Image 1 (tube, rainbow, N blue to C red):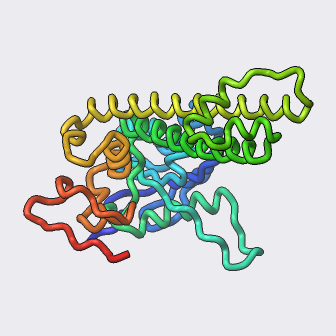
Image 2: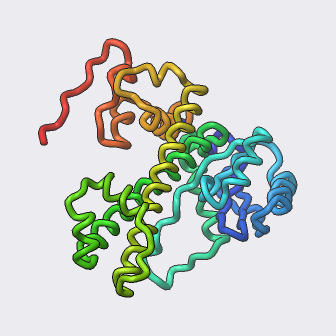
Image 3: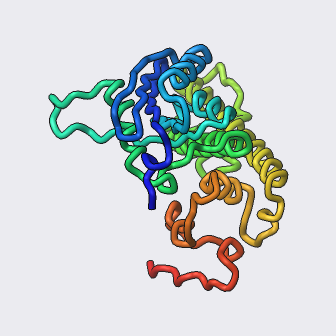
Length: 289
């Protein structure tokens, strides 16, 4: 299997940060041709293109560290221009604290690591567009649900420690009812300071839970709409909902992402839906728990 060095004239390694980008142009044998550093903005991206056109004309590849975060803007621009882009792995920690590590060294390392690997084994850059839209919605919904769980736990703790009169109103109610009653609590100016402030804390917490739940429901509806527009047949499979379908699309990301059924199971350590497996291939038995 040929490595990348046999297929290109050189590689441009890029070490990305929030405000700056360090780049190094290397020949196909790993020699450093030139290095530069630019700002991480539109002008800096154009400067890097000029740097590449000056020092590495011909077949070239970009190895970008953090192509899904700080390097997302550069990777998107290069992809739109038809440039070959791969994502470089994070650098290993030096064996000794005195070992040199700079942005320029990391850029060279990213390029050399890419040169020594077959193109099929190099991580592809995350897809933008529909995949990124699903990814941000999934992340936002996940954090909203996590915040709701934390708020429910806080509400329960407030009820346990509330003054006896207030605790008696909420203690025996189911969670949903506690949230509804807590959100409707009114100020009680004749009560003690502790009682009044506990009422305010319960009301604020319950209303926060309601807002987070409404946000999660709205995000779920948006996810379902997006998935139905991309792969409507996926939602027709039994047991596959909008969240599972969206996560599958985000995890798959590009052709070749999953080379086998074993690779499809590996990210979640779960058995995929039989409809997602190759026809005629029986799923393996589930592990005993």
